[in-house]
Amino acid sequence: MSDTVVKLTTKKDWTSDQEVRWCPGCGDYGILLAVQQLMPDLGVNPENTVFISGIGCSSRFPYYMNTYGIHSIHGRAPAIATGVAVARPDLDVWVITGDGDGLSIGGNHLIHALRRNVNLTILLFNNRIYGLTKGQYSPTSELGKVTKSTPLGSIDPPFNPLAVALGAEASFVARTHDLDRKHMTEIFRAAHDHRGAAFVEIFQNCNVFNDAAFDDITGRERRAEMMIDLHHGEPIRFGVDGSRGVVMGADGQLRLVDVADVGAEALLIHDAHRNDPSLAFALARLSHDDHSPTPFGVFRSVERPDYGASVSAQLAAASTHKGPADLAALLRSNGTWTVANPN
Image (cartoon, rainbow, N blue to C red; front, side):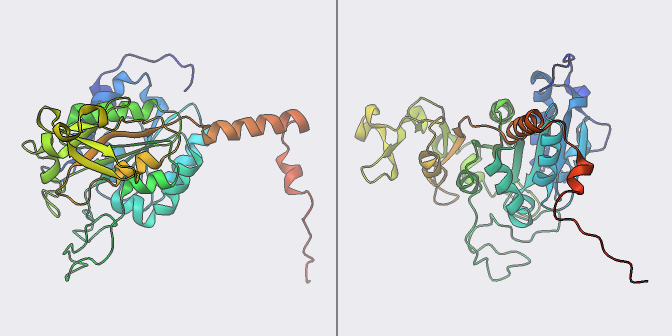
């Protein structure tokens, strides 16, 4: 971040004058409100903040933030954001994407932004459907999903967004959902404060084309027994009065247990700062379907050099050893040739 004095702002200062145009009842409204209410507390200025999106319902997001924004092309938001973050390390750069935009046409750009550890806050809205184009199956749609593009049911095994991010060695990986503003705010704040590539999956309801996809997990009456809240350094417990928990067997597999059967001392202690991502990966794959307990919170948060800082250090070292960069000399260095005029 820059040394610019941070002004006191309110939600109104971060809200644009554009009419919000999502379907009534869409989960995107809750996510937008959580971000707008959080921004005044982050110690940044609107003029030093950029929201970059691709294509999809979620990608309307930059219009509704009173900041700089780029509504880019399908899947390319991480690539464009990489350029912004590296060229202007003083800016606060967010990427808004969806399960289709980020994991289908944009999958390659996403994994490389995570691999490089570019200093970005990436929010992936996962509704397991293509909403903007009216209901085709997406890379996260479950097996057997019947849609306009899979009338006999999807035969594609779905991506697990957290597993993809962890496989790309993302230094910060988390999950939240659109029905709990407090939880979203906590997760977004932690992601923003992380130096490097922060990836957050958000379970987001599309009430038109995939309504109630997550109700068995995030529905208010189901949360206590279905949502596993992860807290670094604490035993992993859930259920009414913490009656259930997670243990790791001798084979390395994670299992759900009744605490009364194994004792509290047997429960797995969550370690989000563990450099080896295998534990976070196992937690990301703990739930087998939409009807089994599912972890939420910060799965991994580790420190490693961010891409922009490494590039800046490399440029500074080159300038020290070789003097100021001379672009014209570089363009005319070895490997150039002259094409003769045939006339």
